[in-house]
View: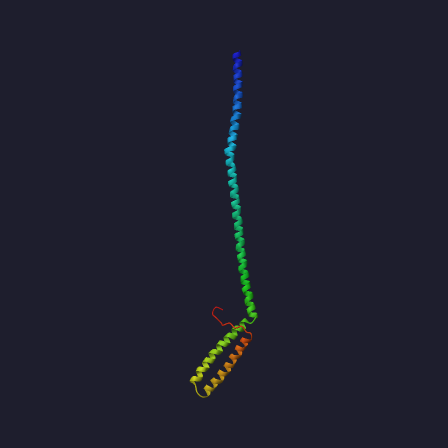
Length: 161
């Protein structure tokens, strides 16, 4: 009978030893799991967080780019409005009158040249008529030049303007 008791005791001890061994293996497994697998999970979560941050940064840069584009568009509109205002100011301050005066001076100078050549090529009454017209145009040009000296700002008409 002691044989049976020793067998039961050995069996109970082996079961108890297996339980202790199982608990130890479980602790060791959890230790290594936490040490390696959990670390991998932390790295995975960190990588996911970085991707989320980079995605958020991308969206923020995209919004910034859109706001920059809108800002550039607003600046262009402001520049256009400023150009319109300057053109209105030029018109209101007599810019068109200045251009007309420029054209008149240019036209008169051409007329003076034409009458000078006509005086050289004609005789008699035609020559006298050309002299009178030349004197009249010269006086008008002198008047315009005095007005310019008095305060008109004259700009020559260019193809660009």
